[in-house]
Length: 110
Length: 119
Image 1 (cartoon, rainbow over the protein chains, first blue to last red):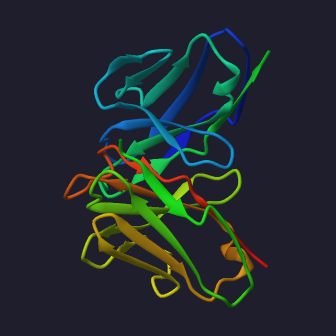
Image 2 (cartoon, helix red, strand yellow; image 1 turned 135 degrees about the vertical axis):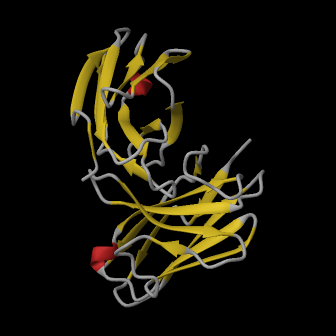
């Protein structure tokens, strides 16, 4: 089958760095997305990786290793507003839809 | 740019009634729109993909006669939940893409979601 695994919950301190991991097993691979979703709101796009390596965008970076079926989202200089759910989604062989992880709920404490 | 709106943002209806949810792309032409459903603490589940002017493609297990999708223009798609039941209570989210033919691998722009509660 196809599945995506992410930790359910994480806690971090304001100003710190946190890494959210995502492992996937899919038939085919057409890229990996990270989305941020605040409670009661729709997801917002953070990053898209299709090649191996690190993509940096401001305080957020995303890494992909296709051979390991692994990605991580790195959040630096954490702010309270970063408290949200972070969703990992993978494009598999069926290019009509993404396979979504359950999300990692991140709580940033002062 | 790339703003998608949904209306209403929340709705409460009685069991057996129908509810229409609108999804609009405000500043771009959405050749493809996607409808998702999300239950509490669960993943986004793609319900259907709609292309302007053609019939929607429904995911396996989604009843097309219960969830009617119309994509009549390049800026508007509607989802009608017919004969709603309490188990249809969920967070419904649309997203839009300006790519054609759309693939989910192109960036999607999400609407703010509609919370439906069926009593």
